[in-house]
Structure formats: structure tokens, C-alpha cells
Amino acid sequence: MSKGIPKIKGIRDNSLIKAIGNIYRPIDGKDWKINIQLEPEQGKQSLKISQLPLLARRRMLNATEPPVLGGYKLECVMANDLWEAVRIGDCPLAGMSQRQDREQWCFRFEHEGTKFYLPQLELARALFLYEPYLCRMAMHPGSLTEEFDIQVLDQPNEIQINLLPSCTLPKFVRGDHELRRALASVILDPDIRRSFESISKFQMEDGENIGRYRVWPFRFTPPPLNSVRLGVRGQFDKKTSTMFVFEIYGLEGLQTNHPGKVHFYDPEFARSISQGKGTATEATAFGQEDFEIDDDELPEASGAQELVLDSPKVVRTYQNPAHTSRNGKDKKRSSGGKKEDASDEEPVDIITDVSTDEGSRIGQLQAAGIDGMDDQSDDAKNYAGRFQAFDAMVKALESNGCKKTSSQIRKLPELKGRSKYLLADGNPRCWSIQTLSSGNSRFTLMEVDTQGNASRLSTLLVRHPQEAFDWPEIYDQLAKRIVKESLKWPTKYLDSLFPNDEVQRIIHPTSSPENKDLLDSGSIAKWAARVLSKIQ
Image (cartoon, one colour):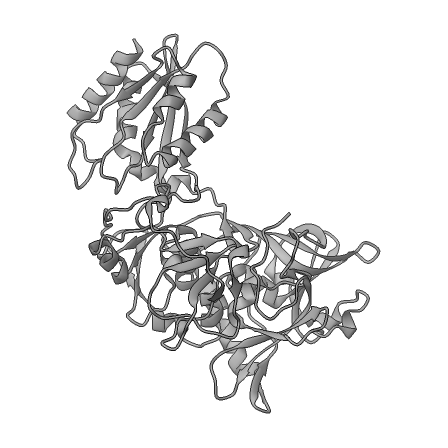
């Protein structure tokens, strides 16, 4: 079962995408559209380029029942040097030469005896075109230079991306650490940027003016993807070992070539903080039953709150996931203004029509975005630096005879209607869990990152009872309750699990308000001594 696709106005219920054709725009206009063939046949035969994140062959639009994913599933390891550019009509599967989109470009390659025909637009959708903003940007030469400036920093392995005054990057992308990471690779990685910009290059070179329109069959140069594992669904013929790809659902093992710490300098973030609106991601997620995308209208350009539409996502992982931050001042992280959970905010009226296009002065609809990417990279190491003082205290315990048996950093879970699982800049809030032993005693220390919060949470010490516990389940439940209670230890839950004083709260040493991790060795030693006194 997959997430449903948001409804699109003017399309019949349960319309199947049979083919995806040329991209076109009026010769004297700038708004690109893409031809689609739907079943049943109907008047709507094209959609704006902003809807590309939703479009893949054999997907059901305006489904009245939860969608069931079609097509045969396969995985393959990619190697660019074996690729060949061909047309869909060159695929030997039955009916391919008669398809309406037979002239669209594919990549043909082979893996373990199976010949794959992968539509180029589908690969670009999985890599870049998972969000309407990037779909529009990809069509215009020089768009990245017009929106972003790259600033080299003195610090090794760090770089800054300045959002220029002309930048139209949506607010919800600015405040989402996964989307920022992917955007950073497009802006900074030379190969990925060259691939993204090849879209507009091919459009300029291969597009044709036919009547009143400029028409173009999508084509681009992919970035290096050697050793990336690709998960696809499509039409598979076992006799000929031939696969025509409908949809990519996973990209595992992507690599990037740019500094590991990327600072997004966003003056708008500084203004939102100064006005007490330091929300992490300035957008609201709605289920697709709440609205319809009006493909023919524009949204307001008022800077009002954006909606983020649920949609099927392409899962991706990076081998070297970068860490991004959103700053309102050069190379400095703001602590954020007062940020209440969404449950305390004014209720938002149910929306009927929304637009995923770029905002306009003449626009009338609520602005909305689409997030078609799910970054599942193992990036815990990016957040280890938040626990420097805590780690120093744990090392002090080790030097006093304690033995560390396990260590992990976990992200607090996303809960609907809550915001404390995020920091002000949109990065995940984490907690550190360290399990140690001393003699016959075994205990776990827990520390929550309270950056940007009015008060700091004490260190939690849990002495392990004799009976066995399902610790992974306890950690999951504990994390949810921490978020629900706005960064407080859930006392009732802990008392129900550990009724015999196994739970202790260890207060922190006094530290600088500007840097809570800046502690001298004497303060850390006293902190460790308080822990040792509780486990004797």
C-alpha cells in the first residue's frame, strides 16, 4: 500500500496514467506543461510542470480507494558506462512501438542478464524533480545562479549557500533538513549540478517551435551513479529478461562531492526569528482528502503559510550524508524565538483548492508544495557534536571504572500536531542513550538536545532492573512522550515502568547561556560524581 496522490481538479476519478509525453510551452510564454495520456480518455491531456513529482506511468490519479502499487519489482546496481540513449519505442516488449509516448527518451542498460529500459524523465524525477520548485527551475538556463550564491568559508569541510534577494525557494523547503540536503547536492556537487543544468541545455538545443508552441521530448545527462542500487516497478518479460520501468521507488547509496557541513544563509529566517515566528518548517501537512490541486490557477505571493501535500515518495540514502543548517546570520545559528507546538496554534481552515505553482501577485489560491522524497540516510554522526559535554561526562565515568556497553544517538519522532521534534532551523532534535556498567550495576544515561528551548532537561539515569525489558520498545515510547510533553521526561510513564527508585534525574552543571556544551573539566567531573553517587 502506498500514499495516495493528491487530487487534481478536472481529472476523472480513478484515471490511470498510460503515457507521459512531450514537454511544451507557448513560444511567447514561460509556463511549461507536460502531455499525459489517461485512461479513461478525457479532455484533460496535459498538466503543468509543477505536477511532475506526482506523475509516473501506471499511477492512479484521483483514486477513490487506497492505491495498490502495480508492476513487477526489481532492484539493480547501476553503472553509467553501460548506458545507451534510446526511444521507448525501441523496447522490444509487446505494444511499445505503438505507445503514445514511444518517441520519449530512455536509458537502456543491462544488469545480471536483465535489459532495462528506464525513461529518462522518471530517473530525473527520482533524482531532482521530486518538488515543484525544482521542476520549474530545471527548465530555465542559469536558474541556480540567479537564486543562490556560493561562499567558501575558512573552516575546513564547511561551505555557505546564500539565498539571494531574488530567491523563490519555498519556505517549507528552507525549513526541511532532508530537502535542504538534496538541494545542497544540486547546487554544490559539480557532477550533480551539471546533470541538473543539462535539462535546460537539452531543452534549448533539442526543443522545436511547432506552431504556437515550443515542444521538447525530455532528455538529460545523468550524474555518476555507479554502485547506486535502484529499486523499480515496471513491466517485466521473463522470456526475454526485459524490463520497462514505470516508476522508481528507491535510490540507495548516492554519493556527493562537496563539503560535509552546509550553511544556508537565509535573511528571511532572521526576520521570522525577530518576529517570534521561529518555526522549524513553515508549512502544514494535510491529507489529500482536504483539497484539490487546481492546475490552471496560481497561488498568492503573500508569503502566507504553505501546505505540504502527501504524495508517494522515492526513498533515498546517501553514503556520505551532509549536514545542513539554516541561519539568519552568517555562520551563526540562531537559538530561535518562542516556538509553540502546532496543537497550540490557531486552527487552519480546511482548504478546497490549492496551487503548486510559483506565487504571483494575481494569484488567488493557497500555495502548496509536494515532497516526493524520503531521505533514510544513516546520518546520526552529523548530530554527535551536540552532545560534547555529555560525552565528556561519560568519559569521566569510564575513567572512574565504569564500562560503556552501548551508545546510540536517536532522532525524536515526528508526531502530528507537535513541533518539538525539530530544531528552529528544521534539523531533527536528537537524544543520546549511553548504557554503562559498574560492578554488578547496569544503568543507562539519557540526554535530550534542548537547543532553542527555554529550559534544559535534566540527564536521566535508569538503573536496570533484574527482569528483562524490551528496551527498543521503551525507547520508542519514551521518545514519543518526550515530544508530546514538549521536552519533559514523562514522569507517570517512567514510574509505571520503574517503581522502585530506579529512575534518577541528574541536574546539569551551570553553563554559559550562549553555549550549553561549554563546560570546564571541573564542572564535568562534578557532573560525573553526581551520577556515580546514584549508582553506588
